Image 1 (cartoon, rainbow, N blue to C red):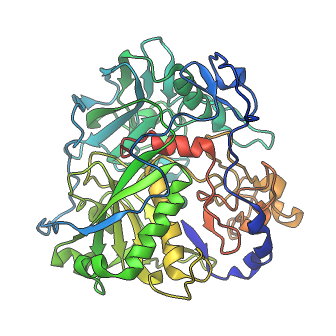
Image 2 (cartoon, rainbow, N blue to C red; image 1 turned 30 degrees about the vertical axis):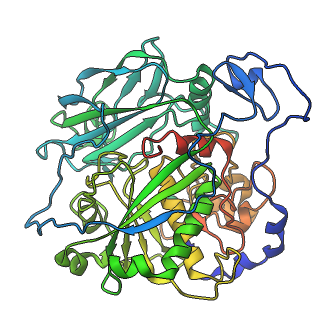
Image 3 (cartoon, rainbow, N blue to C red; image 1 turned 90 degrees about the vertical axis):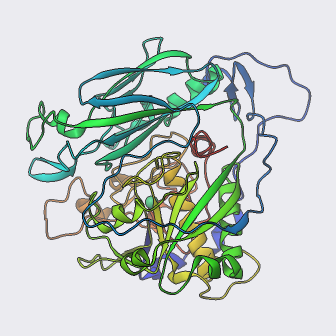
Length: 520
Ligand SMILES: [Zn+2]
């Protein structure tokens, strides 16, 4: 997530936030109603959804969670890994009982796995074996990380829930519209990647309406971008050498409107130890605010466990350079130290993230290793989220949440944003305004339609002058109350906007988060 360094533009709408309450409730009129049978949300109408064949306003809550929760913060065991002498890209085990090991498979190979009756999601974790695949390929002269993702994930009924080669429809502005696909993957996961489905509007509706995914024997085809590159024009550096350890985690139902999430937190700081953090009242406020933000998705924040890293790692990673984030770069190597054997989100607190080639307008305040994170397979090169401690305890903090004035609240917002990436959410609108998440109930803010007319020639898809930065879709361009030219308030907008960010989430965003196997 980025933050605007000069937020002057962002202060104009301060009063408008007060009238945007939480997400709307169900559409009932209070009277007794007959249950309507359904096969999809379109059979129900209004704000109702189809859950397991019946129209309802929401799935029943999980009995163990009523958000917002009060998280428990404790000191956990320190990490003890010794300092590696070279780049390490470990293949990790799953902590989930019942994880299916599909073995070590070559790209192009097909494999089968089982989905038990009543399963709510499938997560496929692929980890490169023995440095067998190139780290990147060149597409039209640009380097692209050699991401690993199955080419096809097929249910027993023949339906393809994820199709790497699917043709993507376009929206009215000519931008890709992923909201009509059954599954979506955003890339940027070389060496190790996870795919959790369903994660799009049609995929969620299908699974929700049927009360789960089709049970039985599913198939996938092992694949990475280098393998696809061989048959693409303009692509060089491809090949079929990649071998991956593939594991499948199925998340049991029933589909619920609440769930509990735990955090393992690793402290890579020269200013703060895990023991000090566990006693710090600012940490209390921080995770209470994170719990409030996650409560918007029906999530309870349960256990927050703080860990020290080994002394060598504190020295090496308190300041992390993120000019490059490949598998052997500092960020990915830091993430391999997430060795707490839990199915939680693994969050790293560092003193600073540094860049040497600079964006002078926006500062990166948090990064996630991959979307989604490899829940239940801790310690891979993409298995972490990182935020900087600089804001903790800074500014003026009253009793109300205040991302503009209270540094701890701002940090909590960033933690909640990165945690939501881990749970599978993409930015509702990317910086360019040409790419949007695969959920139809989130607002979009297209550059071609929402940037001021004088800026539209510099939209990323039209900009012909490489010396010009493409137009960034800042909050003031995306502040309408409608479904278009909106979304600046959403937790997953690409930019933290001091005046507009209020952490809102839509029902579909919340559903994606809750079906991640990190949620219990
Ligand atoms: Zn982000």
